Amino acid sequence: MTSGCALTGSSAKLKTDELKTADAIPQSKTKAETESTLQCSKILKYSQAGEYKSAVDLADKLIKDGCKCSVEVTKKIHFSRSQLNQADVYVLEAMKRKKEGKLIEAQNDLLKALKIYPKYYWAQNLLKKVECSINAQITGLKEEAHNLETNGNLDGALSLVQDAIVLSLGDNDLKLEAARLQGTMNRVLQEEKKRKQVARNQRRSIIRKGLTAAKEAEQKDDLESAAGHTIHILELSSVGEPLTPKVVEFARLLGLKLFSAGDFSKAQNLWEEALHLEPDNVKLQKYLSEVEESLDNLKKIQPTPPRLSSLSTNR
View 1 (cartoon, rainbow, N blue to C red):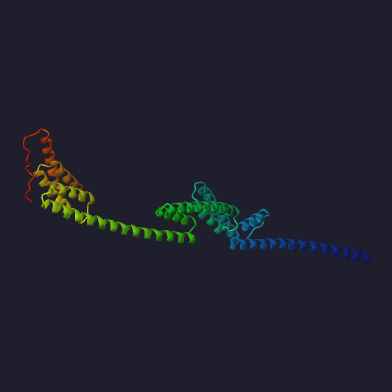
View 2 (view 1 turned 60 degrees about the vertical axis):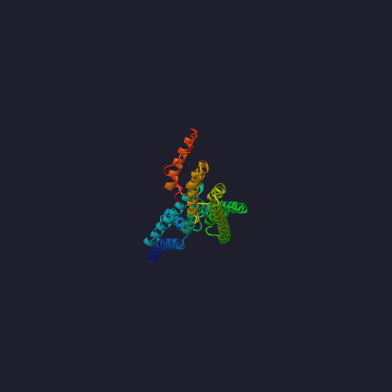
């Protein structure tokens, strides 16, 4: 009996140990699975928060440990990787553009990279360098613009300030500076317009008075004085001016009188000046052609001045 009881006690102890061992295996397995689930949940949170590097690093650790996550978490891992890859593409492109001197484009690429992954150290560091270069350029443009403005080149100064605005991504102070320069330019242009108008009016007044004086001299048969006044007002006249046609016509007729009086050179001078104002005037072209022929004939010392067939004092 005693022996039977002992056997029974031994068997019971063995069975208890077996049960403990059997219980320990699933408990250990359950603990590992719980830890894996927690880590997968972290990956999901990292990805949703935009902390893609943390999500990918944790995922790589779990994969190395032989753990698996749900389909949803796996998709987030793939998404996080793709986002990091895209950020890398932006940074590489920014580096290339920085070397090419395309600082604004480089800055935009880096901002895109940091929008994807705000904690991207290399993007942050490169952005600081790019912005430092941009600020140096802006400072240089502002100084050059100031020098141009000092020398009176407002248009050039405004152009440089506008370039600086682009580099600064629309700095308000620079916009105000551009507005000030534009206002100054507008005032200068208005003053210049007024000055030109005053000068134009003065010139017209001189032409009008000169034409009157030339006509008075002609009426007195003082052809030399009339020619002098006419040459002067022809030189003051310009194409498109209201008085120009009247001046040209008077010069044409006065030239005929001078030619008839034998003063071929003065007639030629009048017609040449008048032709500059009306290049398509057929009569003047013909007169000049024939007066040149007459001047050539004079060189042969003819006893009497030649008479041009097309020239007449008949008005």
